[in-house]
Image (tube, rainbow, N blue to C red; front, side, top):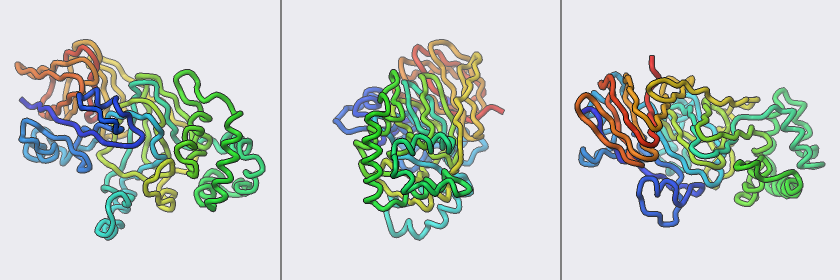
Length: 388
């Protein structure tokens, strides 16, 4: 049978949940936060194949070529995310930027540990996020006029003192970002203190189940009182995703996921250039070289629905997300696929063979399986390549 169960790997992050992923996969909760569950071959947390002596999924695929078909390697990384606090603000490189950056850091990788690398691999990183619960994110720069209006009110005379010259530049937003991230530490703290005082009268922290820009900023200041990223809710777009909605982020877009639980699907990469709300390594010069410093209106993806589920196609040729919920589905198949059972259970039927997935379990379907049936009582997510 060209289908095999895999064991995903949990990743600990301070912004994660102490219970959500642990309960879902049946792992003991010890009070430590877990932010992500990785399903894929990336060496930073490769999935394992229990039926193949716990080989890594990458090794298993190289020994069982029918799973990859014509592919050299798995092109995507599939994740479950549990976001209790804002992730670091970040952006990711294009393929050309990743290849160049990874090559330039060859010597660096022999001298320092990987937490100080800008590039973990030579792959680009586009990504999409599907909301399982109400989810708040910051994605892409706002229009400069709107950002300037809010920031000048929040900072008062300090805005003119430190950022008044931005309008004289060809790209005012880029000039603002450059100035903010190079402020003298004492001046940055001064700006944050004025900003925090203004936020107390700005408006409510919540709009229903969602954090407002002011709410994001207040929480960020409590966690990172001397970090330029606390201003991001007013220079980045704040996006609210209802359960079942999704967004796509191309490389170079500055963003941060703020709160909620979701499915993330991306290129098989762990390249992150950070822009604040973190104690981790930041290389602002490289960040500014990579990021797209212009207005970017993020649009929610429009799903396509047919007899095989709900599908989210993005501009990326490397990944494609499908959702199957409470029903029987007939699925035509043309590429390697990872199935993840979020809740309930599912039965996969390939010809006269069957496999059951329970909550928190996942399996890989080989590319030479042309069709299969899926009966689920609950919710199953599928990561694959876009149909031709």
